[in-house]
Image 1 (spheres, protein in one colour):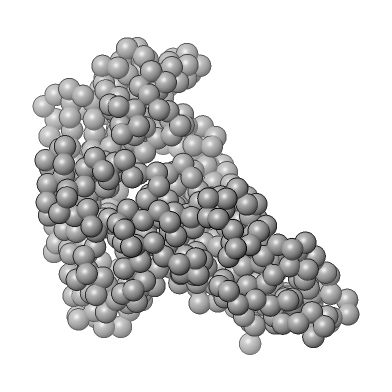
Image 2: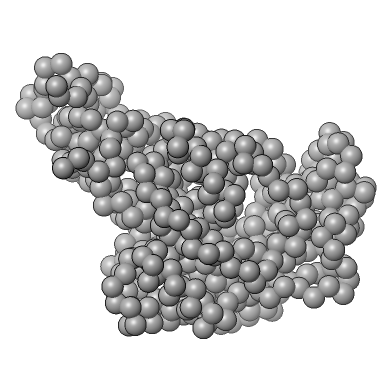
Length: 511
Ligand SMILES: [Zn+2]
């Protein structure tokens, strides 16, 4: 007996996420049968879905979003992303302090000194929440403000030597990069049930925004266990691709390569490395000193050590997703990828997360190596003030040059990096990509941007079976309630979007 079919009609089908359209779409058993004229696809017994004029796209992927942290911010963490002054932050911290049991950690996230006027300090936190360990993570997650009790519990004193790749500013109570691990390690470890709750909260939210897939780009062993438990129970609402971290913050210990996993909803065959910090907080590794700080950021790996860890993963068939933002970090990473290609020519495609300050040489090298670029268009909107403040003039012409990535022939996958940014809606990302360039002339076309959320996202996920609406492919679909091709981009973020992943699509068809 053949499985039930679904016929989509009454709207605009966009099989390739561009100007080309079709009248109807027929889906059976979670797979695309055909697109075409309604009269040709009308099938007796098929369930009919009237799109009511909406536009149907291949499913959207957020190729880099910290799913569990998004969920955590939506449930248990103090969300500071909307705070616009230190007074406002103080009120929120004091209120949360009053509500928490004695001795419990107060953990918040999302402050940005470019919006507050100044960063929160140890003294301030000690005053607001006396005797309480407080950890307030900056919006980028590369800098953390902590109270004295938090430092005490982590065993950090005025003379503590920071771990490699990290910095401790004891007087101000600021921990940078790997030094965060010292405090994180002193906090009570979340239970698996908590991780599961946060993952589900994050994925449910992403699904509500219209996404059908996401990459969680920093997964450690307890988080991986939570994902696998949810997958085994059939509870993952959208498809998830994991980048498994090798080197946790705060130590030189290395996690062994994980067991690979590939089911219909969950995939783990990638590892993650952090080469440097962020641009918005002036910790990315750059060739010219940042304005304001005069520093050149942090390079977290010795090159030989990075190559060895990458080689081990590459040879074992793992894909690599590596965080590299500054031009110095990009050079280090491309050197590693080039050497892998030279010494071990057969291997999977690798990714560069963020790709913040590439010059033409970086882009050429990346194209030659078939690297997938994973930048974040929304950064251009939300973090612009930080770029103005820190990025040295000599590098200002290289800030997230999205157009140049396409022109270089790279496969580009768009993402949000939420909760680094507040705005996770895909159409806000689209708008930033087509009219938010930091560097004049670097806006992309709507079709390029849509391709990066669909085909590009599927490529970054490692899934050639998605990304367009073509026969045989997964019928992961995103429905957009307006015509992006004839409306002002300013109105896009408010257009309703919804997404769906078919429940009955087997990962591989039986032979
Ligand atoms: Zn990230």
